[in-house]
Image 1 (cartoon, protein in one colour):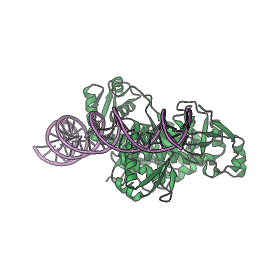
Image 2 (image 1 turned 90 degrees about the vertical axis):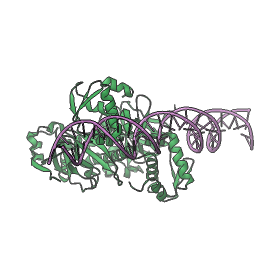
Image 3 (image 1 turned 90 degrees about the horizontal axis):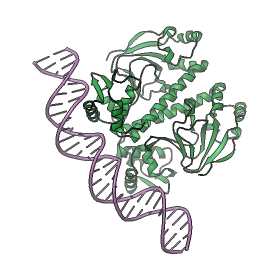
Image 4 (image 1 turned 180 degrees about the vertical axis):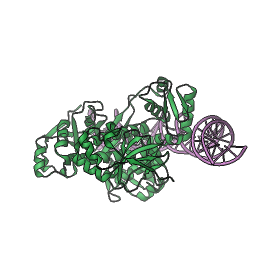
Length: 235
Length: 235
DNA sequence: CGCGACGTTGAACCGCATCAATTCCGGTGG
DNA sequence: CCACCGGAATTGATGCGGTTCAACGTCGCG
């Protein structure tokens, strides 16, 4: 297994994604202070594991680029994707409420993260309330996402879950634009609690009906209204 | 519909459950300060709604006594219980990240809550970092619970979900002790994503097999090992 | 007693998992 | 450049788990 590549030391003051991170509200002087913690920029290739469920937690991460899946595994080998992370997302903080990571984090495509020791983060949390506020915002956001998924899994059936997943994934893009979907059928299934075959069948169906297009890891939403209707208009 | 009863003004300094609330880490002087906010103690009867999904959020609550269900409703009438709350749980904070409650909160049995205006809470959060820390702890705890439920719903089948729910519910009690289960079949189903009938069938089965006992809203765990085995030994 | 809410039980159906080929596609080596 | 390979996706056939529909039982309460 390849060893993840330590790309460089982070430079907070020139960091291009800082406006969407937990440090977005700091002023120039404060950014200098956090620079002292020397966060590391690390790159992972698709499939590489950023941390493992049960591992002693030492770091939290900010996702700079790419997609990451957060997976919870059961003792018997079954597992479930509990979150999908995108640019700017903050993760690995499970260590703040316990010593071990409660999930595994895996790169879905080529990923770049900014790694910060939890010990430093704890200090920061106390000395810079603005940082704590931003973290809180993200935790509540993540809680909200998790609770929304609970409803998806608990109250909807397979077709609805798949459809609203696609609609959510393409939301914010103009219709017909291609958007990367760096998940294979197995991962989509693991996220939505269905099998590979079910994912495949519905996707094939919707492609035939012209609701969506797909090509080598990219999809386009061709007829969101049509898709919504197949499934029930609500949400 | 009955109007919930404003029982009294809260007296933080003598509050019996304060050790398990977000104010647990405050010293006597600080408790005096929060007393100034004059939290209200309110009582709800079974089935009464504490707040409604979509309602403008003005208050957060600490559960002093009883059980509360947090429900998320879909436009078409389907709904799902996203959390069950017990003594000491802190809820209604959705308003901190938005203006509206994202769920409804309903009393399952006779419930007593301590109600605190969100505006005051926001101030407290800044002036008393210890309070913010305690809130953070609860949010992360709740996130963890939600993500655990995601795995339950996404990866387990009905029998497993029901069994691990029962085991969790009785965890911490000595075997054979009666513990209150203030949920009817419909609510258990709504929590675990199964129908009333399925709940009933498995419970009846397990009662016949002597794994559990049940009597008017109370259950006892008679053979946890047996129950665990029916379902697969893991977790 | 009779009503209504809740729970149980049975029978039929169907959605999705499961099992099993077959196809598709990108990568590798001849 | 094509042949071949392996992993992923597709598609079909079958079976089961859990829903759905319906009937009945049970308990608490006016």
